[in-house]
Image 1 (cartoon, rainbow, N blue to C red):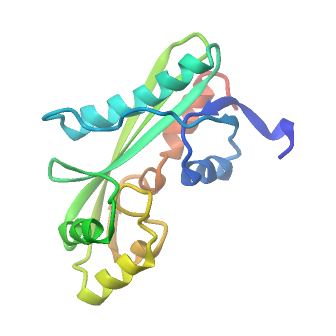
Image 2: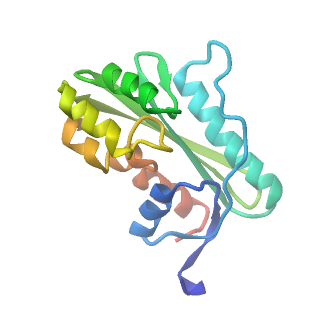
Length: 193
């Protein structure tokens, strides 16, 4: 990638989905520096405070390493009721997640945090509702055996699971991992075009 194509911000995320989304709108970060933080929820922590805290903590951790830089971070969770769906460690856990989501509406929440070169923090949180069809046993087992759910919080909508989604109410790119409209406006707001 040519240097002139790089934009003046550091992405505090190792997510290939977020990088691809940013590339889609011509916003290639000059550096990628995944944050190393504890992402466990606090006792009785609700989904919105949790996701905002994690996105902010990621940005702050990377801003501490790279002062006077624009730092962009994000975090995405799937929420069923008030339950936060975390990355599944194995097929059995993911099977239970899919059974929980099958035939019901759930939310995908992505929080984006930007710390500018002066240390000013801005944050946007986008909630999208997903209406999922009732999964047959074959659909469930085929999805689990596909393995595409590995390493993501719940699932990847841009994969096989997209065929199970009856309706999306909100931002598709937010469900993938980064709400592009909000992110572009935040970056533009600190002079990154």
